[in-house]
Length: 240
Ligand SMILES: [Zn+2]
Image (cartoon, rainbow, N blue to C red; front, top):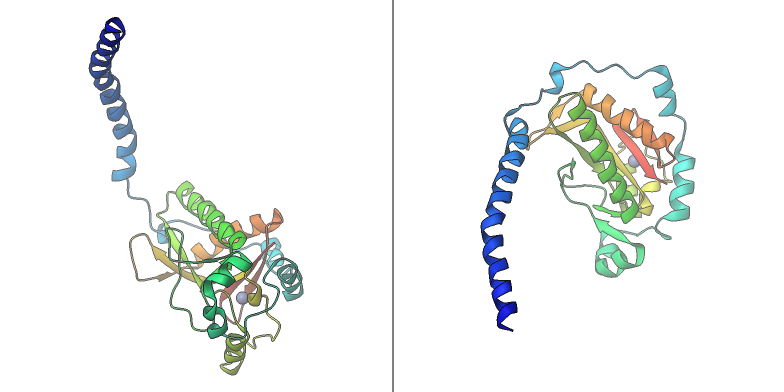
């Protein structure tokens, strides 16, 4: 017994001496590795050249019309559209559980403004897709040595009342059949982006083109359908 205690005690003393010798150099190495990032200011998007969309890329953004979006979102999304916000919110948590919804908030990748004709909810698959899109977009920016810019969600889950309101206000000649009812579709503002740490957006076609390229890549992988909407200035996306 005494022997073991002594042994244990000796071991403790040894580790107390050895640990700082191991940890301190490790911390120094990690700090030195991180220092360049902390002091390096990446460029503004205005300081780099971004190619215009090619004819092939423009075609990719017209390949899948609204019918494709409706088909996939009806098959995999919320079975029956909500009538209005009140109906959804009357059993908010029940609906969240029943349909596998998540509330979407501002995060490091995107901004969710106060929404007029939609509610900030999506099915989990769509939220995961948004995170993946954000990760890839930020990597593209980092590879160009450009600072982070968050994109903006402009329309998310719509109720039937939202859709009627939109059409009355003639925002786009909005179609009566929308995939926004089903929790797998959302819109991203085309040119509105938030520089890191800022609440005021900037407007940039270069950022739009980089984001669209990331989306075309994900569409090619079979992850989504993308439409570049000309009238509403948004990008309509449905997750497959
Ligand atoms: Zn849309």
